[in-house]
Length: 461
Image (cartoon, rainbow, N blue to C red; front, top):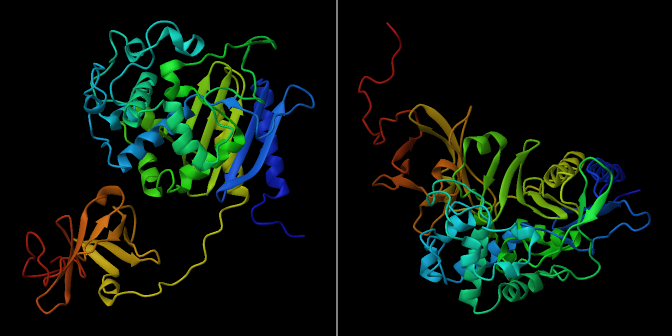
């Protein structure tokens, strides 16, 4: 009996079900629903509930809290890609009069704009948005807690500003722009600003007794871009696939790579825990793998969407309680279970269809001083530089029209790799941001900075 490649094995499904059953039971969640994404689609969904015979399915809405911020960030990146704004623009350029306009759009997206974490006044998540009708009401008299750009400090009001920016530049309400530009193109029909049946109710579970009471479900008003959305495990599975692969109708794969790249100053505690904030997305390290996505919470609800790009596995976890199960830990475990039980099959190796002799001439062993490196050409047309032994700087490089190559990651990201030729056209050396790479250690025939001792290499004595 064979199993279709898009299905999970029975043992894997059983392990996933056991993990969410444990989370719902030990976390004392009224209900918990989860999904796993692989190959761009949901390959497993399940739920556990305290109501017998009434388990939610992938179409039941839960509030997703701050996962909303990722949707808002997508809208801002769309404006950037259209040339309407630059991420380096100060907010004041597009949304004047806020009093915090020196923060750039990138800093607001990355929570490094120095703004306070919460709004002044009563707890905004449990009170009507009508209490905060304008941006001045969510910013208050002291909107900043830190100097701009100096540190990561999570700010919900910062995303209210970004939502207002979208409204100003699009000339339409944030929720209308979101529906038209993201939800409809991606087919997220069950992701809405306000709850639509069937949806879960939000509950507070008593910390010391097995009793619970309902949480208020408030409309967040101008704070909506920071945490208003309702969604389902099915819709978030589709959204996870988009965040991993891109969709040119909404946002390109390149712009999504930018969203997934750390963009905020990291503190020592964050380094130790493996956490970094990107542009509307969180990057965490768990079980030895990098996981990118976002968590969310509002009174009565917990949520997480996370993806391991290397493993091509993502997970969604939703629960309807204020506290209890740890959604990221559960989602990370779901990713780990699938990645370890059914590791991703690599694409079949294929040779290049054609290669220019001048490019092929670059590959092989090179030396930076006495450090040995190898330059390889892969079927995707990129070259990669990596040390032959031990740790060292490594990067892939993309070809440019002028015959140079530009670094894509690490120390050499954005740096130029230039093949330098002799008057007769033969390859002399590589110039990588002023570093000279030669075919032999300190090659006498190459212009090594500082020169080469004319006596050459020698032994002792």
